[in-house]
Amino acid sequence: IMREGADVTILCYGTMVWVSLAGAEHAGVDAEVIDLRTLVPLDIETIEASVKKTGRCVIVHEAPKTSGFGAELSALVQERCFYNLEAPIARVTGWDTPYPHAFEWEYFPGPERVALALKAVMTGGR
Image (cartoon, rainbow, N blue to C red; front, side, top):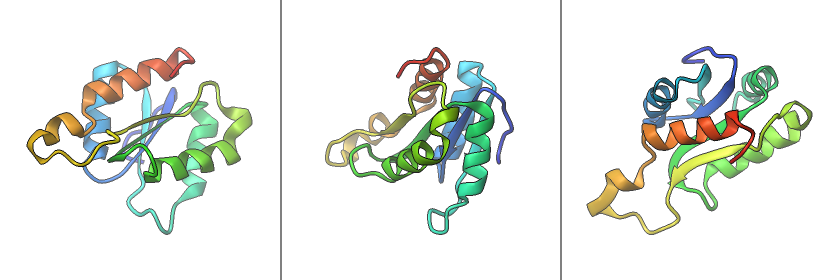
């Protein structure tokens, strides 16, 4: 757990950890930021405990949304924490396009996109 919080859980790894921390600050949301560190093995117990505590989950990664690891994380959270969720799980990801080398900073999720997702789950939307 990189940052403890009570309102929403952010699941992320790699560079997106720092982007998520900045996004939480930008949104002014008391977010618990979990650096997954490894995808296999996955520390599902920490994830489950956090989401059950906060009732909300935002997943942030650089890969495209379609077929990205965030989809697997979302399924795991849904299976294990369904009755504790107060809003739909949100994913902030790269775009579903071929990787645009010339526009990589527009492709990667930034703090503003993370902040928008955080504000949306705090109001129960997407």
